Length: 416
Image (tube, rainbow, N blue to C red):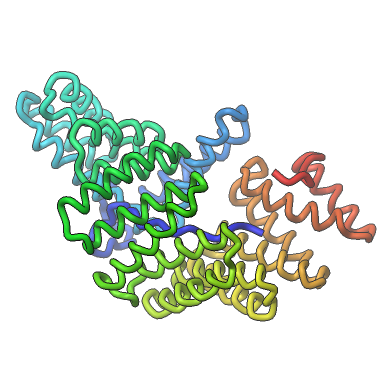
């Protein structure tokens, strides 16, 4: 089975207001459909690159592909995020306009409106080199561009430079977030600790930003296996959320989910069950029964109930989650395939092999078509199916396993 979804409390810069999907709707000078076409082209290119890539390059390409898939799954949210980043860049350029020249600024603004970041990047590099008083702002702008272009390692470097030059909440938060994303969790801890210290100094001890900082620090400590240090931070964030945003808010549910994930890592499953149930109920009440976040919360609870050997309820929940994912993302999406795989694992565990088999096969087929045979997640789910088939005793199982090995290699039965 796959692991639970961990919730992020990091603000990705969603701008307010709905964005239409009509043919003549424009976002920063580009139509909504042009945004989607560009994302699909990027996805296709990344898949092709991944098929040809050496092992050392695969991790970065997989990260980029995963982010592109996230953007495609919710293009309106992506366009809102992109609009916000461009607005931030335009404000940065305006604030650093002295000595740049009005014509060059106008040209950079016009290019940004068409999705071209090159002129803005050149200006930011010059400002950083020549105007030390604006170096932190310029470095932050470089981080925004790298983030938009899914260059996460470059984003982490730029945001960390900005935070080192002049630490603010936004700069420290971005530095911690992107260092965490690229697996440099020990460095992320340093910036997230500084973020928490700054928030406690500048805000009240029970401010919503302090809860965000506590969650981010706890997540980076958890990634290092420092569970005893992370747990009180998650709990403190929950207590603040309870007083600020309230216990009916989806962000409160996300914080519950993060603490539950930590307890599960420690084998404290019964403690986690109460939190998972509360998390799911809040999501259903606040987001509705047809929202992706509700489906994820339902899936997380189902996974935990499977571990607690409560298969009857787990099966009902997995099937509920599948219905929502089918509506929200379609039956060819990674999220749908994940729950199909998890349902198959639960059915296998209770001896319902004939029902499990087509679900495993469907999950692999969806991911192979969606992500490609070389994608690490496709191979992970194919490995689940291969090990299931290897346990079988029929000629049909043996043939299906041989077919799977012909696609994914003889080592597909080996856990990664």
